[in-house]
Image 1: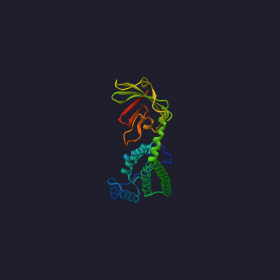
Image 2 (image 1 turned 120 degrees about the vertical axis):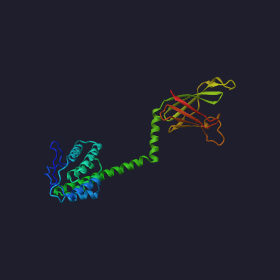
Image 3 (image 1 turned 60 degrees about the horizontal axis):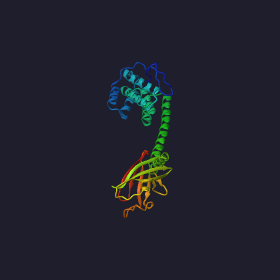
Image 4 (image 1 turned 120 degrees about the horizontal axis):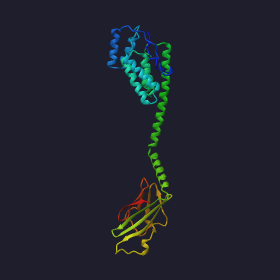
Length: 310
């Protein structure tokens, strides 16, 4: 029995990529067993119905002619493999060959090229399965060996893909570990602080309803410099002329760790901590975009102040 079929002469396909088949002789009418096997496959494709079609087809001296619709799908799928550059194109080819095989399940070259489309799309298990099915047809020794070589080639690609997938999964797991996440966050924060060298922030804060301060913050390196002066005081609040001048809040600046700088109460003996509280007086947090600094006081009274970059 011959597996030859007509192929449109306008297509030029590399022999290493696709099988091309000469014209099939005009087929005699199929017997009832063959028609029944084809109908069963088309109604419910499975390994069993697929194998039965091929088995019955192998007993025939001549196979039925390939339906025009099946040949159209075959040519479109062949073109998509030949000219396709993306996985989406190869998936389209898979669908075209699926239609060709459904309409003509006795057509070995449609089964073979369907396998090539699966391989091109990276669906290696399906490619191997269809090549094994192709080997059930009545083939020449050369065709059988070519299919076996193609299976070995696809298995190699499958093995490499699985290895790359395992490496990618391992890398993703490492990158999502708490240590890796913390390290990336630390690097982002360090880069932010470096980019803010020399940045100046201004805003007001009040320690009571009768006293308001101007505040100035300057970032130099990884240190936060803070100056303060009285902006407004109620008449009953005792102030001096120097109270309205800028004064450094610390003798030394406060270190920035991450995006935070912690002001310890020990630096300022005029501010008393709440009994039993942390010795931290204020925590200054630099915003993610570096446009503001937010102060949260830990001393009494508790306040939140925001200072904007100038």
